[in-house]
Length: 255
Image (cartoon, rainbow, N blue to C red; front, side, top):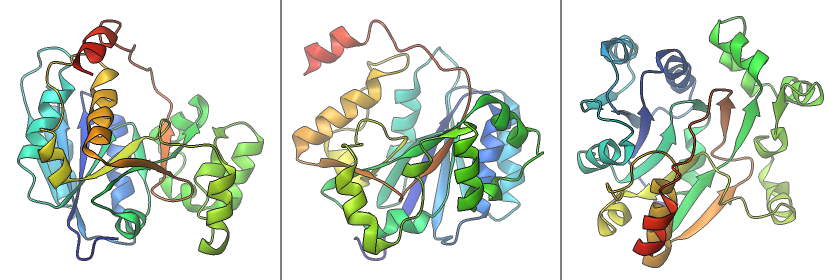
């Protein structure tokens, strides 16, 4: 744990206003409000800026970092967001998820560890019910409802996002396989990100920019640690970008 830590969530996005609105709504329901947000915008239209203004008026501390669209160059806009942050601890996440309990991250924050938050997956039909406001995202804090939706097949990996009591959390964690490759948010000290010069801007397209970042953090001496039942997220169903087929060769060369 790092005492008196200042946290900033950096959320990457591109022209997905509807899901970004769900993400930002999630932050309105946090128990701990001592955090800030940065939207790292890979060239969206003015609608994203309008949405951010709406949530700023709801007292969310949000800043907006934008650059002109020139293809998928998320690594560059994330670097600008990290470079201009004034906080101690950075949590990187994508804009198609929303998260509860920022206090979890504060409790496990470490300068020597990359904390990987796990996620449950909300299937297509249920995702649309959240998007259309048929359901409120506050449903996701109801364990009995989550278990029911797991049984009906509407949400998968629910066992990863249950807020287990501390007494039984350790044996549950030991019983599960290593989760560091399956997370959806990464928490890293800003100091460590500066030491490795953040993301490698040579990577364009999706996939290898995160792999490369974790590789270099490992070489710096930071251990990646998955967290069952803590630092959790819920992943809205959406069309996935294809992994950059040309990313593996330069990644291996850089290794």
